[in-house]
Amino acid sequence: MNSLSLITLCCVVVVFGGLPFSSNAQLDPLFYSKTCPQLQSIVQKVLGDVSRTDTRMPASIIRLHFHDCFVQGCDASVLLNKTTTIDSEQDAGPNINSLRGLNVINDIKTAVEKACPNIVSCADILTLAAGISSVLTGGPGWLVPLGRRDSLTANKALANQNLPGPSNALTELKSAFAAQGLNTVDLVALSGAHTIGRARCLFITDRLYNFDNTGKPDPSLDKTYLKDLQKQCPQNGPGTNRVNFDPTTPDKLDKNFYNNLQVKKGLLQSDQELFSTPGADTISIVNSFANDQNVFFQNFVNSMIKMGNIGVLTGKKGEIRKQCNFVNKKSSKLDLAIELLEGEDMVSSI
Ligand code: HEM
Ligand SMILES: *[C@@H]1O[C@H](CO)[C@@H](O)[C@H](O)[C@H]1NC(C)=O
Image 1: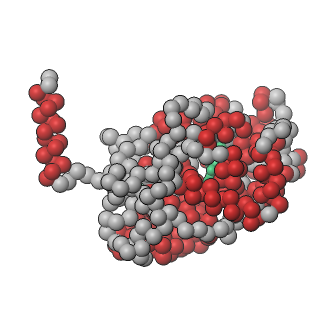
Image 2: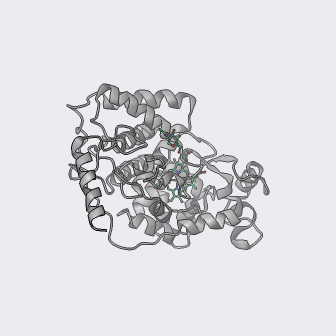
Image 3: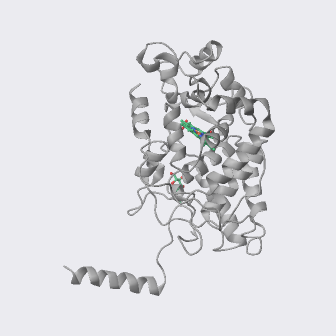
């Protein structure tokens, strides 16, 4: 319970200020068609090869993209490792010991650099890899708008603030999405990604044994599913065991997530909130996705594209990183001169 309330606390969403800039005006699926025509096939090849032995990887990549976009936009900020100047988002509560796929993105980047050096951003590679991950798991495919550039900064505090938590109530989930310019339909559609991948037991121990300090399990959890989960997540276990989000087709991006919610088999509390919050406007959306996979897929595509457009850097903003885990070094003589001048300024102003 302690670790869980800590996680909940750090993820409470505070909405201040305006919406992040969100425009797709400059993005274009054909952005690299002349400068890197092999891009799509390279991403497909590397990710396809990895996924054959690591069936969970597409899920991990989709989540990595989500965690990038919700923190200062889809700018590959989540990929930046800790350095003297970077407070890495990878160390934020929702990411620590949890993110996967960083080195898969690095492998794709290496292959892409070989074919078309200094052209393709890490932010675009991650977004494209997320789209291909959908196809690899049996989900829909779409033309991924491209042309993002990579950030020069990361923001660990913002990662703690913006990313929703597994014990969030529906109102908190809605406001976390609204803060990114995403609406209730986007929330329900994107949550459908929880039809693939795994979650650690520590995020559901309270639901299984002591919900809201009642000493009892969460009443909005199916009894058979509860027993099954209790077996996988023993009461005083380490919390690090992993459970499938979807017990029946764990690696298939299908509409099962919504059918599971209808029968009280949502894994996270935040998942089940979408269907079990009394009178919620999300219930009819869950039902419509549960009834027709095409309706889910259409909405999933639409919302993935919308999420991929959040706060993108385009034109001359940011840079094209050479290595996705680090910003480029200032190497040109011009940069060095500027640095020296700034240094002089600082000295003379003392
Ligand atoms: C609505 C609020 C959301 C909450 C509270 C939430 C929370 C979580 C948590 C707690 C985990 C397990 C992490 C771990 O065990 O280390 C997880 C996994 C995952 N999330 Fe979410 N998530 C949300 C939305 C999303 C969205 C919008 C997407 C993508 C569109 C997404 C995609 C995934 C995937 C695919 C996994 C499995 C990753 C893997 O197996 O490596 N989630 N999420
Ligand atoms: C960056 O950090 C991740 C772990 O967070 C690690 O897997 C990766 O290898 C690191 N990248 C480099 C180039 O050191």
